[in-house]
Image (cartoon, rainbow, N blue to C red):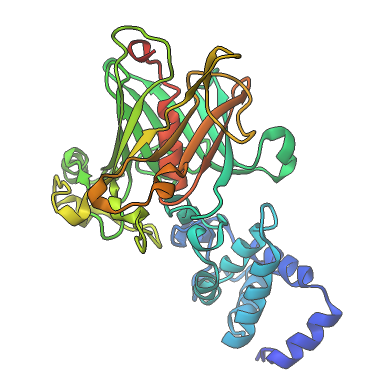
Length: 409
């Protein structure tokens, strides 16, 4: 029988052995589980070993089971101390992967890790995949960049300043695949770069345009928490008829509109975003934005059909592009991107909240840039976002700028 170490013994040994040794041992142990066992775990960004998984009787599997039990039986006080120290030490990627490794050991480790790790709004870090659907921090934006690959029509979102400045510290967050159709253009968004199937667990959402490329809908694979949104039933009809690899229901969480430039006047594009999943009160004092805590099965919610926000207290948040100023010396339209954008482009924009006087939103809050997007090099664009937008929403809005809009320029 294996007896767990006490908290006092752990603290004594931790002074003799660096914390990295514990994390390294955890990571090596988690790699011993087979690929089939990983598929049995719940979706959530870190593979989690079940409490009692039927391992084979081989010597390697027995060793994995023994080590799994040794770590799973640690007292909660000791386990909390370990995870708190790891979480406090690693504040950026790739070191942040040690926190994910702790959540990959077993369910008890994952439960405590979820209690220790805060949301991006609270700590400013992206740890698990669900963080990509949670609002960003209120004070400082999360700085990212998008790399465009024209040959494959793919767009990769990384967390970091730029490819040159971040180097190997870049963290791939989301990947979008552009699919041209006869009457529209789709940007399918996935957690990985080689799986864009709608029935896959890696599927995150989609951006769909109209024929002219002036209006876009942002689709999510799950409804926001405590927020009524529009849902589509077409996929459900196919699901019940086939009963094979059901496609996930889709929920319209936002609408993007670009104004037509009929007179062909010079100037940047003018855009408006109706965020159905975010109430306008979220940017007010004491307001909160929907924050999902886990990936959920949305089949039950999808059966409710089409929904709209009708209540006055659930008026959706509206974002508009910040009006640029004309620079007489440079003879061009200018915006202050604070050094994050270096190349002039019609795709560059900044979004701010467009609040009504009755919503009691302060002027400084209305002037705060919620999302900014701009070009810094060939096929390289920066994207910085903050509360109340999530990384997925900001990425989808930025993708709309890549679609061709001859009638808006």
